[in-house]
Image 1 (cartoon, chains in turn orange, brown):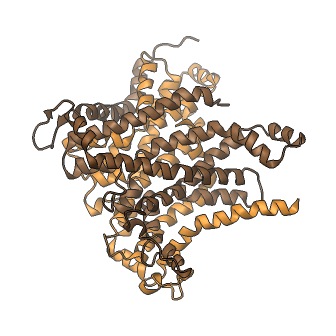
Image 2: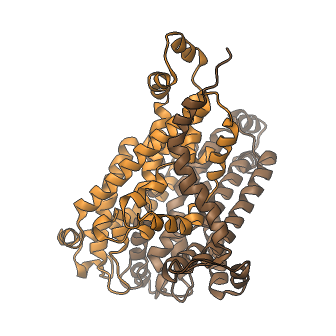
Amino acid sequence: MNRKTNGFKLFPTIFGILLLFPFFWMVSSSLKNGVEAFATPPTLLPKHPTLENYRNVFQILDMPRLFLNSIAVSATVVFLQLSTSAFAGFAFARLNFRGKNAIFMVYLATMMIPFQVIIVPLFIEMRQLGLIDSYLGLGLPMMVSAFGVFLMRQAMLAIPRELEEAAIIDGAGSFRIFIAIALPLCIPSLAALAILSFMSVWNAYLWPLVIIFSPEKMTLPLALSNLHGENLTDWPMVMAATTLAVIPIAIVYLVLQRQITQSFLTAGLKG
Amino acid sequence: MIRPKQGRTALLFIAPSFIPLLMFFVIPMISAGVISFTEWDLLTPPRWVGLANFQELIHDQDFLLSLRNTLLFILGYLPLVLILGLSAALALDRKFRGSNALRAAYFLPVITSWVIVALLWKWILNPNGGLVNSLLAQIGIQGPGWWTSKSWSMASVIIPSAWKDMGYVMLLLLAGLQSIPPEYKEAAAIDGASKRQILLKITLPLLTPALFFVLVISLINNFQVFDQIWVMTQGGPEGSTSVVVQQIVKNSFDYGHMGYASAMSMVLFVIIMLITGIQLRLQKRWVNYE
């Protein structure tokens, strides 16, 4: 019996170590000098650890600036997605108006539109608005999430009617009910949506690639992808850059692991 | 309690999302359809060409190759990610010491961006001095050219993709496994069923709705595959990893063929809608939520 449970644990553990090994290799490579990084047989840990690659990254890329860009764009988009979704979700869940179902169907339908399909007309639209190579052009198409509206509607539908009616008797208007009752009760859903939208904006690649050209406006993934050339790539330096980019996300993940996996699950099952 | 019409208030609540939704989703979607019937280089006014773009698509070797490559990618990626994700979910379904930590570890690649995953694996699969080929050299095997080789490039982009997505598949399947009432397995065990029988006769059949769901999501997502392939191979060598979205990007932003690229987008859209349609039809038969 005992032996069996041990064997059961061994396989997933070895598998987990293998699965995480690429991350270990990334950090290890980033600390090796150019000769050792390409050495055969490969060394597991750097024999002569060096921070030279990190120095090179900071010389080639304006890392603080890139981080700030990514943080600013992500934070703004998350804020906009949360507020637009909460407002609309409240209207669909708690307000009574003509055409409600038809309008909600439009939201549901847009959930099925793949971004890759509308990228060409979206680019043309941004060009006509004069928003190419600008943060407005980058962020505007991401400011609304139909999935977010759907999620917030679900959350707000679950609010007991008695709470709302008590507030109405106290003379509260819709806006007051939204702020004082609906929003506080929907914090778990708002948090899940915040995590999901942050991840998708922080990691976004195709749209930034299409719309942003100036190096000083680039987000982290875009600048990283420009680091490697066709033939001569300084891999230890690239690994130093990716390590720097992974660390903050890994820390956030360690702290919020349960919430993050839970929100991915929500997105998977409802989206 | 009959509530009064709240049209004006509703308008205020809905407008902040509805106007952007129209501007950045609905109008572009309709435009994509309209532009696909035109020839438009953005410099001169668009010219109506009817179905010409679509007729050209059927004979466009580059586009057909990209469709074939996308299918090939999915054919390699799907079994790999499903088997890995399913094994992980089955292994971690029961609680044991360290099972939560392992779940967290398996999920870490999921939250890493495609660009980082692609760069990392490009280095690991580097033909000269990359980890895999160096290890192969140790046991006397001359490793392949991976992403520099026409015959290995597809495998080189499939492996990192499955590595990154495996944790997500595991997460969804774990939720599916946990929704199976434990009584079924207990009853079977009392009747003397072996672990293997329980797995094959009870767990897997009851997991098919979740597996089907994962399959459909993966299909929809991976017909749109682009990021990791673009970073690793830019579609090369010799177009051996060029995919549909890359053809759209190339034709629109490199060649300025907006109409032609939109026609490709519409083909992609129809494929994805077909998969969604099949899912909606079969979902009623396969899946029972709650």
